[in-house]
Amino acid sequence: MKVEHQLKAFDQIFKSYDGSQPLHRFLFVYFKRNKQMGSSDRRWASRYIYNFFRLGKALIKADYTLRLAVADFLCSQTGSLVIESFLPALKEHVESSVTEKLSLVQQHFPEFDLKDVFSFYENLSEAIERHDFYISFFTQPDLFLRVNAGEMQKLTGILKQEGITAEELGDTTLALPNGTKLDRVLANSKNYQVQDLSSQKTGTFFQPQPWDKWWDCCAASGGKSLLLFDLEPKVELLVSDVREGSLQNLEERFQEAGLKKYQKKVLDLLQNNDPDLHHYEFDGIILDAPCSGSGTWGRTPEMLYYFSAHKIDYFSRLQKSIAANVVKYLKEGKPLVYITCSVFKQENEEVVSWLQENLPLKLEKMEVIKGYHNKADTMFVARLTKL
Image 1 (tube, one colour):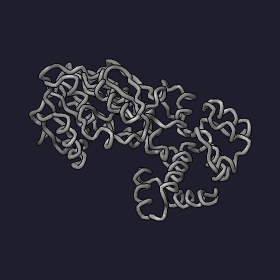
Image 2 (cartoon, rainbow, N blue to C red):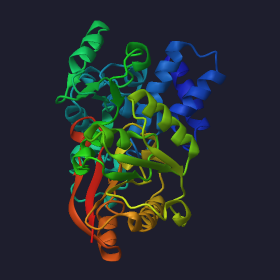
Image 3 (cartoon, rainbow, N blue to C red):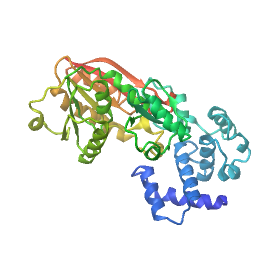
Image 4 (spheres, helix red, strand yellow):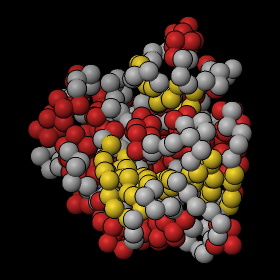
């Protein structure tokens, strides 16, 4: 296969994609429509386009083929025709560490500025270690499993038989290589949930008690609810989301996990929900708020390229409005657990400040969960008590 052939395939994909949908969905449809592309073509095209976006806006004025070569060099541990053709002086260093490769790139391209990888650096939460965060984009995050209590040995045994390397992170968490085909390997096992490491860590902020009434108000596919249920199986649970399709996915996950007793409602939390909730009082509310998702861009690096900064303020306003509409259903002295998968201070610390200034809430604790140290997502969580 010639480099010209690979570049042509990359160019066609890059010019066809506009960032309006997740890249993995676009590629699925694109490859389905272009059946002439063999498995090798698809593999190289996927590698190149994902690595290209991992460079963010660094070297943005350079020719895109050179940018692709630099990105592929920084993100890969194996060589490629693009690296050999456009970075021949660096091809012998492709197995070096990211730090070493960054030094080489900066020597050859003095205009390379690491902060341009994440061009929204001025909006970062203060707790983020910027250098570590920036370089994390050159490494694909892991796939994490939350394993049911007592099932770790059985699950790792199955994975070992399949030749899959899995790292145990505590008693209930496994880290696997991204792209592991769980539907094939663990098709008959229901003893785990796919859940990012940082998302699992938010559970330490819940602290549910038996027979508490909890509301997961932006439940999506139910990951936080399942975590809550594992922490305290006797909670009385209401789940809601504005998207009926998400709640259908939630029902399937709950059924597989054995969570049978719960209520669900399709609710728009920007509207008055008193007709549905006037008689409800909760001992805890999980607000896993709609957000920029900037803490997950290691998995969706196309957002480094296509995200618009004005959306940060949009999400911040949305988060404040939702919180104001749900807190009235919370009992006094009980917690609102506010969660985002964002690294932006406008969605995190600044929202928490607003909540305390404008709502009857007092901060107990908050944390930026720094997933970039662990090949995981980065998240923000705060526990506030109603006064």
